Image (cartoon, rainbow, N blue to C red; front, side, top):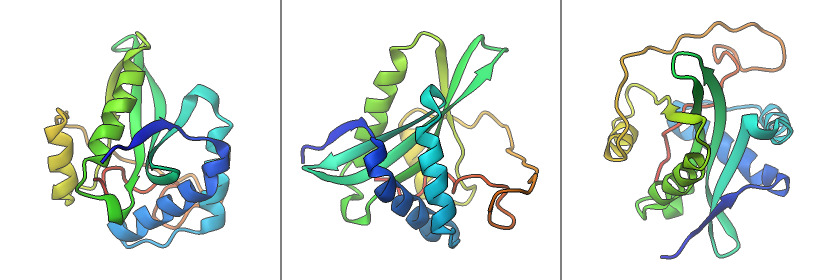
Length: 171
């Protein structure tokens, strides 16, 4: 099946919000407040190069997404691109949508010589997602992600305000 891949537009905020809420429900059994996720997606589009959304389409239908964020690494003198909010609609899983979307995004990242690596986080018990990422060449660098919730906004309790873990619901 021929899918297309491109940067998302702000007009797709509702579908990205929906996919993010589905992601949390399917992978962590969490119900996220839609209004908070919607605000977060809208603000993400306002962040310029710091936050980028990409979508996969089948015809005119958005069927998958990836969000990229950036982190400066002084150890590497370059940007680490973080993959987050990965979601492929259930009807399209197992068809290579995520793999193709990831390769599209990776090619975009390679155009910037200051991007030196790609990172993601994945739930420790999500063996299918881990296997998918390993097939793409990702390795476990041995770090553990820790967080401290600072309160404020409308972050769900115990969530620290982070997005649902990337890597679930992948195609």
